[in-house]
Image (tube, rainbow over all chains, first blue to last red):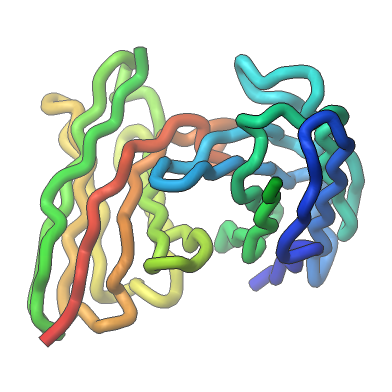
Length: 106
Length: 119
């Protein structure tokens, strides 16, 4: 199965700053990569699909990029509600796999 | 709006069985594939299983294949996960999630139900 490695494990930033989260795949996933946000005590929510497409209702400050094995989620200017755990997920191959997560903390 | 409500979790001994349910509303359930995803306490997400809208296509994670069975009743707008031969490592919050884009992603998630496997 494809292993997704996210870095850093924890990212400490302040509101208004730019956040850059990385996801690296053990083999190519083409463009079939998504990003999810999970806040404490809540279910995950879909942010980005197919590398760079924002899901319904997701603000423009969230953007995704990359291809093949290296992907990035960028939050251009952090809002207080953005501090959460972020997971990448691939579905180029079965089974779908998730990265281990990046915790974005204040 | 889209709602997914899981139920059926609880504490169960290793080797025993449990059936989870996921009641869907706010969308045409019979036209969507549905997933189960789990999250062990303090850990990341693990995909468990998916069933196509009509039940004709089913896929499982290796870790649960042969022990878990996903099913659905489109007349009741309900997804199920039958879990047999439970192991301590199955302890997790189990989420049902609606499929997005041909079994690639999940766009709506329930709040989850906790399954604890312990003697």
